[in-house]
Image 1 (cartoon, one colour):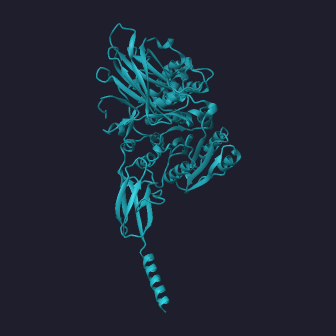
Image 2 (image 1 turned 120 degrees about the vertical axis):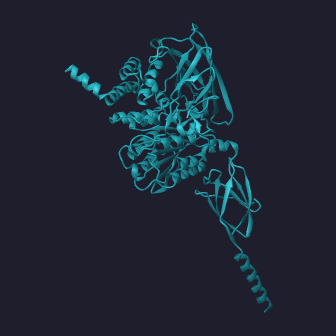
Image 3 (image 1 turned 135 degrees about the vertical axis):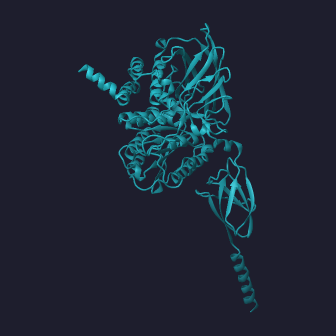
Length: 586
């Protein structure tokens, strides 16, 4: 009898113990209010395996105490210890470390030291582009230091080509002249050998639209990887298969494009495929690059339909990239979409908050834009720049061949991060200057905390930047124009490195300059006309066409195509002149 009573007491105590289970619920955000995924959460005394916040920042943890203690940790944030009441739903806020907070600051494409800020979207109905403010002339005596970002983005040019091929005028804000120049990747005569430093050439010539001014060219060649020893790649294809992608120039084009890329993968490379359209699905998980048929069959099996939960797709792709992460490899998410997100995070601010969380993970981002009519250029450009990546627009399969095959190492293998150029002009020679292209977004200029945005640079990439200079009234023809400094972090380092170059001033006539400088000038003139720049008033399509026709490389299909593109644009923008000319000929 006593044994039975004792057993009953034990069961009663055990029942009370079991009943004394509590459940902690809540969510974790940062100071901007963005929900944080993957936060480590320890209960009580930090022993045992941690819990994690989910992809909506939420968590649910069983506890044996009514009042308990939570310890929160996440890279880039200050640790948090907080006493919590299990009867209440918790909203916990992690404070960003300075380096993390810096990522959220609006970034400029170009920046002039001490210059006060100078303070929409346009395009087809349904398309969106970030409003820009064109760079103006700057007094070199007051503001002799200026700079611009280095990157490999060239989406603007192929998007412009899409408009012109469709007999349409180009939205002004779709024209980014630095990306137009980037498209042609002007090579320096450096050979194909591997090297770990930047190279830089400069040239000063006459200016064809203002005989009083000069053009100053900066040509930068990025370090080049040894192709025989390139590290293994961990690639996650994040493919939009929502209903808006059900057109020939969207999902089918992307399927063909990714299959081209797969042909160049090695056995040591891995591929994962995540799709979003109606829901998010993992189609492949860490498959070797040698299993080409399996990967291509998975790509061929995709069908479009459903809404567009882009935010959830991004979270899943990055989580998968983390699980298959190669510590010494090339880890990259390749997002392919028209950018028309309509479920979950849809605004540009929401997408910015989401993608910035992943910038310090060591995982790069490449954005491939497609489509027409609802194409969101502004969102994809933001994702690429905030996600430590690059951005291309695929208007046809040949462009995919260029981006993912011909320029594979430039697109997918970063050799430098946060790269930018500082220039210190000599005010005894330069009266004023303006940087052509690298125009800043209107909202970035209006933000007093804005800083210069460095870029990601791929192996062996060549970049051309152009300034228009107003020289001093002087007989001095030679001297030092100034100095130039390239700032960058190697892809495996957090420390900035710098390279210095002196800039000689020995101007020559543009007609005597090498082919690449004459052709680059034609590209700048064309961009200025499409942008309706105030500096294009003395430029005509005939001038651009003539300069391009006399300077393009005959064995370069892209430069040759540019000449025809200028002629097409003239017919769109000046149809009256074309009709008048035809009538005269008749």
